[in-house]
Image (cartoon, rainbow, N blue to C red):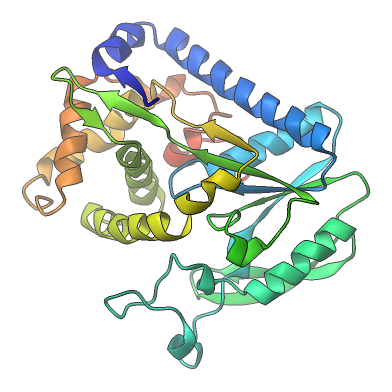
Length: 312
């Protein structure tokens, strides 16, 4: 059954921003605590955490790490991004391509699967290995770091391909699988629906504009490719998850309006080739603004608007 929330009901609750935020954050915290309890009861040393772009994977992993610590279990979060293959003039010829001949940045074949598979087994067994670091600016690997899972330590591995069997193989004996994404839809005054994908797009529009200095048109264009990759390589494997979390927060679109509405409205004609821009503007227009200063520093929303106390 599809979940939805009305813009009108959000506005009613937004008249008391502390309350709507507290309720949403408490609900999310309950999800995280339940996930931590499942991890502990599974007695498995690894957690594989997946979700599409803008789902809140990184903050979910870090919150889970913190929650496990509060329950007396040592935990550490690692990113699968470190296993991307470097892009060099020589390697470009071997990298996966999409139907337009461009490098398929969303493909699992962008990862060094043999190396990751080897390190996954070493993590499970507690053996030391040199973990690579990937520099996105140069698309290259930098110096590696010695890594080993300590006794009774939980390692959380987050990445878009964490549940893809092509990448992680058969891990049910030593890993608990989690999937995070937006599952809730927004419903407008005329009963129109905003798909969860567009809510995740709002998150990316905020983050990429604020911190990666990307133009809106570039973000929309990139999200088209990201969504294609999501349908091919991520969502088909969400059923492998032992536990899933809906990361939607009822107040978040009202916060994003501060960062997006005026800019998107000004560029609406230039962005007419991207229908989702008009859809997002329609819903933002119906929502009252909630000041970002009300958002807790530990909130998942801070992953997209900044000011987080978590170490991303």
